Image (cartoon, rainbow, N blue to C red; front, side, top):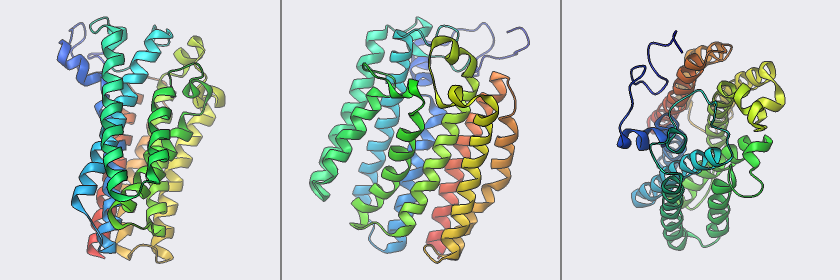
Length: 307
């Protein structure tokens, strides 16, 4: 677009990023906070519980990061194959850019998910074998988000996957593999990270709403319409702040954990930006939303350590 001084990926207009940069952009680095944050939040609960196991925390982080990268590469590949990226306006995709063969993107997705599966298997065998079916379900859900014969991300169910696996399971699971129990604070933190991750997905789908609708990709934003999708983003952040306040009020977490409420001004700024229909504004809001989740987790962790 003539009005955009730079492309959404930050490169100068008209400039072509190199192959390695295309691969990096395809990981959608702004979304990686959605994998780091729940592990950080969960580890803080385990530390406060006095039962932290550092090797388990690091392995859980590897699983989460590999899952996130695998999902993003799988989404890149599947959207290209289904033609959903033809008129997409946002950060560069590897397959649709023409700079990386689609088969290589698919192989990278499977490799990343394989790393997540292997690390998760080792963690489950060292902790509790009952984690195995949940981990297997997470890997399958990651691939079928936009792949397979029934891509549920195209049917408005993407937020369910994100809330479950990048919120509740990632956070509570991290606490469990470290402390071998899941206190109420873990579920509360999991709900918060899940809501914030869903808000980031909502911002992404708001940006792509028109092109997704044209491509037949019925995301939740497409199903709800722009006004209600914006309201949902606001509601997710509101619920996060409410849970944060409540969990300290009832004593599930120490009072200093309320430091996480300091993200409220940033949440308000993201909600305001969600009212725009400009792709560049929504891309920036998405990045701030990911940063917000990371800041919430950092402040939550600090509060639990201080408490």
